[in-house]
Length: 334
Image 1 (cartoon, one colour):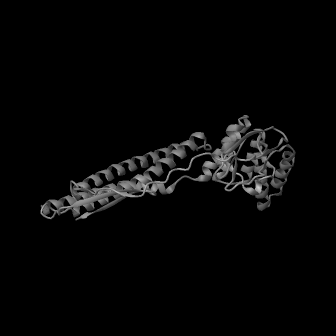
Image 2: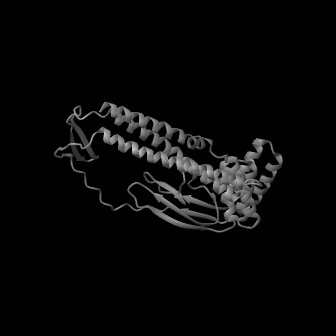
Image 3: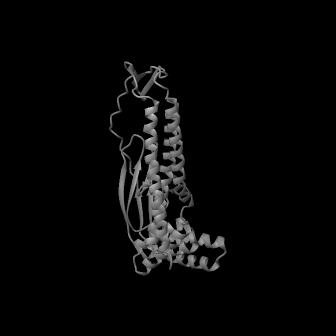
């Protein structure tokens, strides 16, 4: 029996070595990644084209993502223009403010002057929303369109894009207060006052029962560590195969992306680059898990005792339910 076990160990070792070598390309690819500046440039060019076509709602998000990937003053200036064309005056004003600060840091007087000119034209057109909170209850929080409005901003006019805005206030032991506030396109100044929040009538929850011990249950596990080792190792092989598959898909997507960047990256190139990142992430997770599963499975097979060495094992499980949750006690003889 020891001879058979040694032969099994040799076969498992060879299998682990072969699979690990097959997984190396996927791991190397996952580490390479995709150039953020390349994707940012492609998005910028697509946004400029869409803006020239008058598709401002489609162009502005691409400028935003391009700026996130590779920040630049030029992108901010184009984003401000896009927002202005789309009628989002507050967003345009904010983008030009950021562009002004960036141009001043870079020492670009031409860009700073252009941003200042745009800001001066937008400021008389800004619509604002002022949220007044006269009754500040315990634990009060105010949000506008789901974004928290700090206490320092209560009572101050905040530039907002035209359209409907939702103001919501909550406080400890009070019912939520909600108001819809529409803002016009030009110089619409709205003031909304958070009126008294009504007390909540909800009954307090009854106290949880004290912990009650449950009768212990003896569990005799079936199988042995050798069987478990084969199961774990098999799962590891499957995971490694999945990781290798996604590694190959990543290589293929990157090759397709390069084919669409010969004369400047187009929208298909951006899509292929995103696919490459996604497939690489899958491979980067699946391959290490597969190798780990194979290694653990091999160890369990090697360390499994023979029939005459296998001890009798009893496992005792005792559940308990209490005020703060449930617990599970485990003990036994090994």
